[in-house]
Image (cartoon, rainbow, N blue to C red; front, side, top):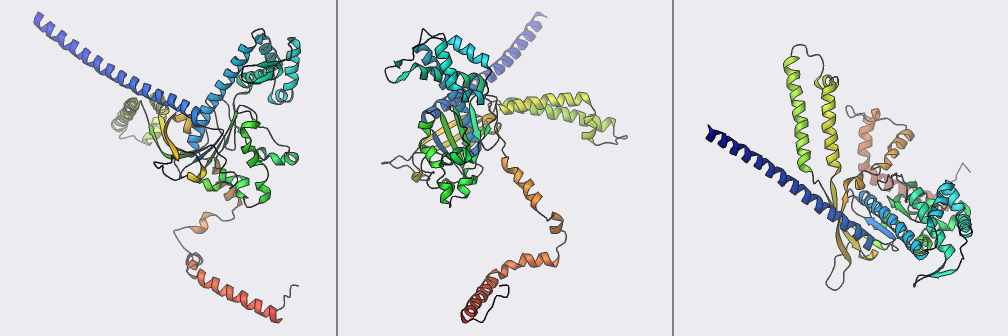
Length: 460
């Protein structure tokens, strides 16, 4: 008897050890994958901080992830701008140990400022604070730069306002939501970048610590009308040349297009980075959990299908899916599994293989032993930062507009029956060349008759 008890005890211990080993192995595997993914994303953060300049151009073939990559690096740039604001504030605080910055913060908090009021009264607010604190507006040297106290305080106030009230702005023609600041993008108009037209349009609202994201740049007014010298000379080139100076190296510009040649010729050579997307890959660290919850969901549906078949085989009056919609218990369980699947799918990562070209003229060319035209990087982002924060079909409104303007409905082109008129229309392309030749002959004969005075325009 004792031997049997020991035997079963050993078996149960062995089973428990096996289960523990399997669970520990799964846990270690997940932790390793998560650590590797986190390390890749951290490397991506510092890589973008190191290589990305103030003007970046993103180029790739169709459906290679141009917009998703542009939105992903925009999210990282938002975090880096927040870091930049914090670093600048800490630097200014360390330079003036006798100044009580809590008083400055409290005063800004008490104003309840909006953007319009703050930027119109920024100098006035700074002047008032300097006077209230009874500070001498002297020159201060940080061993590199010389600035007045007034300039430092004004910079501190702006950084504080940007971090705690305004948030990092993204200006974009396409709708975008930021998971970093929990704010949507501001609309970017064509006139905002046309600084030479400011006296006419009176439209410029870009601010420091911002990102300008132009998706489908080839569809902007300036590029569509690129043959017009008037459009070329409205200042888009000039603002890009002076981008770092105008915004004191606090604003980044990102353009997205399928071909580099789609942009106006006098602008496309101004970028500091030409990112060409070679390929991308989506993978999920939690694929095991996805398969598990997918199995549980299918098993749940199978159970109710069996129940539906055996207990309602004779009085079945509704389809299975309609019948399930009436069962609250089934819907709650299915909702739970669907939520789990959605959550674990959202934890996926995206790898981008990027070529960072140094010059426009080197696009599409390979490196050689004597000259390196591009650097290659693998950048890792969260899936939600690539496709989950913007409208992937922003221009779908064009279909609604075209349908509204059209006077023809699809019933005219019903493929079930083709009228003789439709058949003739389909076959007319065979005679395009003949019709063109005959039209040219007719026009030439009219010119000859006009020269000889044999043809008169009766409408005149």
